[in-house]
Length: 79
Image 1 (spheres, rainbow, N blue to C red):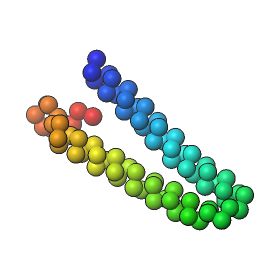
Image 2: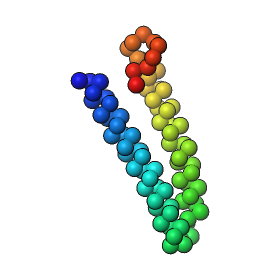
Image 3: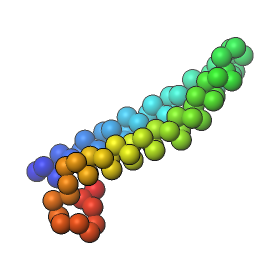
Image 4: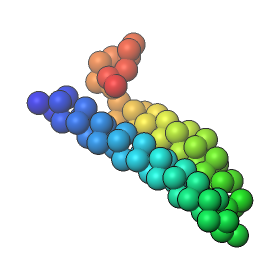
């Protein structure tokens, strides 16, 4: 049961992250279409978040695994 709950939480968080990235790009496009002055900065922020967010999530996952431990004695990870 714990394993199923873990997968459900991961799926919800992945969907939330995908939604945030999509909405960020959509807002950048909308501001570009209405010729808003902040469009260039929003595009830079979108590109930066596209690179930085996955790297941070990977780092958090790595630290979590190191702190908590796999519980399977090494080898293939539990994710």
